Amino acid sequence: MSAPIIMRLMASSISTAKRAGVIIRDVLKKGDLGIVDKGHNDPQTEADRSAQQCIIASLTKKFPTVKIIGEEGCSDLNVCDDWLVTEQDESFLQHNCPAEWQDAKPEDFVIWVDPLDGTAEYTQGFVEHVTVLIGIAVKDAAVGGIIHQPFYKQPDGELGRTIWGLKGVGTGGFTPKAAPAGKFIITTTRSHSNALHQQALNAFPSAEVIKVGGAGFKVLQLLEGKAHAYVFATPGCKKWDTCAPEAVLEAQGGTLTNINGEHYAYNADVEHVNKKGVLASLGQNHSDLVEKIPAEVRQAVGAK
Ligand SMILES: Nc1ncnc2c1ncn2[C@@H]1O[C@H](COP(=O)(O)O)[C@@H](OP(=O)(O)O)[C@H]1O
Ligand SMILES: [Mg+2]
Ligand SMILES: [Mg+2]
Ligand SMILES: [Mg+2]
Image (cartoon, rainbow, N blue to C red; front, side, top):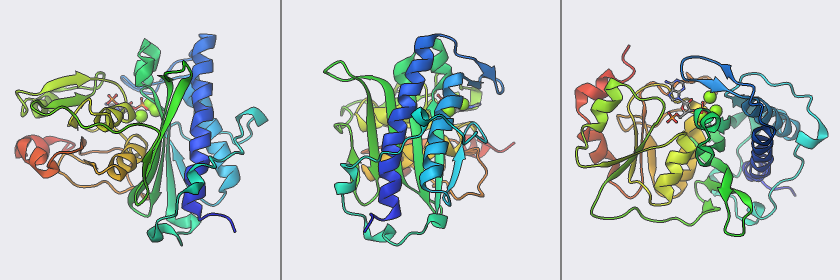
C-alpha cells in the first residue's frame, strides 16, 4: 500500500525542489537572466519561470487533483522530460505519518510554490540568500515545507542542501542551533524596507539587525541560531513566501505569524499578500515580541 498523500507530497517535493535548484544554478551559469520587472523592486528571471514550470508540472503530474498555487502564475505543464521529476525522496518515506493527516484527502491540500525566493538578491549576486520554497497546507494550516538552498556549499564541495519540516514529525537536512544568549539579533529585509517597517525595528533599540534577502533564508537564520527573530512590518510577502518557512520553523518549535501574533490562513481562497507583515521567532516568548512593537505601529501595517 502506498504511503499517505501528505508523506508522498513531502517526498516528491523534496526531489522536485532539488531539481528546481539545478535549473536556478544553470540559468546563472549561462549568464542571461532574462529579467522582467513585475513591479517596483519585484523582478522575475528566467530561473523563476523555469523552476516554477518544473515544480508545477512535476507535482501536477503526480497529484492531478491537488491545488497548486505558484508565485509566477499559470505555468505551461508541457515540459521536457529533463524537467519532469518522477522520483520521490525515499528516505523521507521512512518516517511515520502523523495520525492527524493520515486520512487527509487531495482536496484538503494547497501547495504554495515560490520557485525562487530572493530574486532581487539572485540578480545582484547574493546567491546564498536564494531558496526554493514548497509549502504544504492542509485546510488553513501550513503543515509541511521544503526550503532548498541551491547555492549552499556542502563541506565536500557539493552545491545545494534541502531542509524539510513536517509538523508531528520534525525537521531534517540541517543542524539546529540556538541563537546566542546575552544579545538579541533581528533578521530582516534588505530590499523592501520603508518608514513604518523601520518604526517597528526601532522598538528593539539594542538589537543587532542583519539584512538579508528572502523569507526562506531569514527563517534559516532562525533555525541555525544566527538570529532570534524575523521582523517584517509591512505588506509585500505573499503566502508562497511564508507557507514553507512557517511549517519548517513550527516543526522545529518556533512560531511564524503576522505582526499581531496571528497565524495566516493558507487555503486556496485567501488573499495572496500577507497584509499584516511577518513576525517569526525561535526560542523566544513570541507574544512578548508582539507586545514590544507599539500597537499604533502594528495597526498601521497593511491598514491602507
Ligand atoms: N514590497 C514588496 N513588493 C514585492 N515583493 C515583496 C515586497 N516585500 C516583500 N516581497 C517579497 O517577499 C519575499 C521576501 O522579501 P525580502 O527579501 O525583502 O524579505 C521576496 O520574494 P521573491 O524574491 O520570491 O519575490 C519579495 O519579492
Ligand atoms: Mg518574486
Ligand atoms: Mg519569495
Ligand atoms: Mg519568488
